[in-house]
Image 1 (cartoon, rainbow, N blue to C red):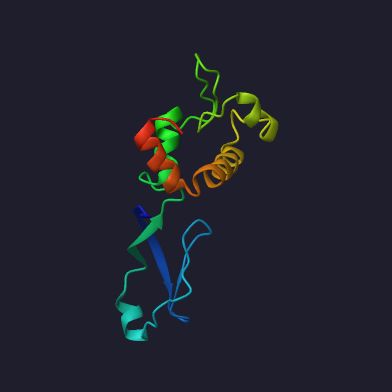
Image 2 (cartoon, rainbow, N blue to C red):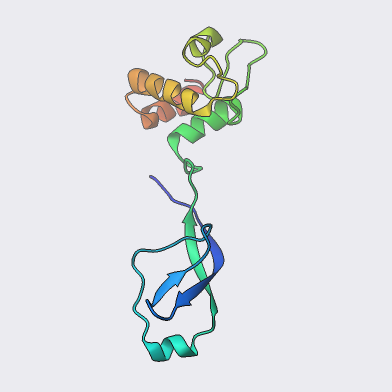
Length: 141
């Protein structure tokens, strides 16, 4: 299951009376599908209108299979190292040299680790959901 978290932002937007389009600063979200505003409505509308715009959170959903394993294995820390086994990274590669050979900057490179562990999950378990199922029954992957 994939879920998408939403955060609502209140942004003041201005309406251009001539073009009936919403205008704003470069930092404000602009939309292609803007409603037509009649001259009468535009005259009555305040210069700044508060608008609530949902903003998608760009990250793996907290209940994703990948995130589940990363949380259990490393606390979701890229620089995690197991003191007793020497396993390292988000998914605890063992030996750590496997990860270090592919991701020389593994301590800070989340994207490289995601690619590395995704390849591992696919090759060994067929998918992240297969990896999670194995983890749940063995408490390791």
